[in-house]
Image (cartoon, rainbow, N blue to C red; front, side):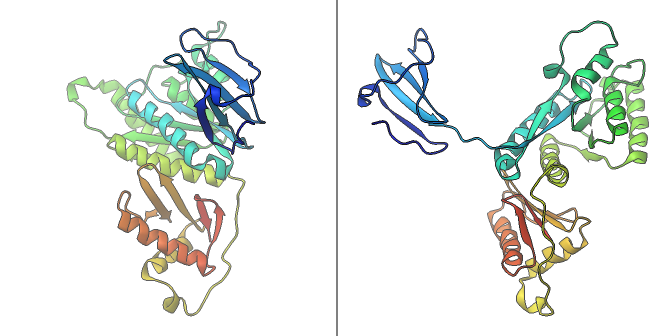
Length: 322
């Protein structure tokens, strides 16, 4: 008898411990003698050898339905590190939130999602292959605006303008990291200043100075955007109020409740990352990331509001709405 496999579990053992011969679906790979075959429903197994001893490993996979949100990464060539950070943040967000929110974030860029084609402007081809079917755009700038396309000051600017004109969410970040003056193209830098002015007229932008600051802000703000626009777990308003709130709640819970009452969406964000816990409302952060005492204090405040019925949880580990 083969062992019963639970979702997301693995079982490994020597092949001679399994008297029943599985039916192979793959072919032998030279060197490691690897075979893959189906066993239980949604369960897969691999046979491999180490020092001429055959082993078997069972792995089962859980699936779920989710909304796929395509996020375009747009930038000139001087911010390659930020492009990597964006992809890492989206991957981290998926690891933590995808199953509970039923939303999966898919990074999209010209370097991974465009292919050679003749007959049109290069940027027009990128627009058609990458931009038009995407949902959200994240753009980053530092000292350069990019290369003119014939229709805009750069490919990144053309992508942003088309995305904004289509009424799609557009998140723009400007780096203020130090730079050597002799390495700056003054014409490009002037174009950046002009583009900033255009952005200020059209909406909100964000600034940052270090990669760590960019990562922290991006994770929090992507979470806000995605949960506001795409999460199917929408919510429930205040269940109760009390004239004796001052006697019931801790000081930290009162502060959090007041902030939530002033939040435009009436919500509190609770976001877990690899670096710690965020609790935020009305653009204020309440838990000091990486400080266990602070995280425990503010999570306790949020839990007290939930326990007394002042808030209700919308999606596991992600969002609470008042």
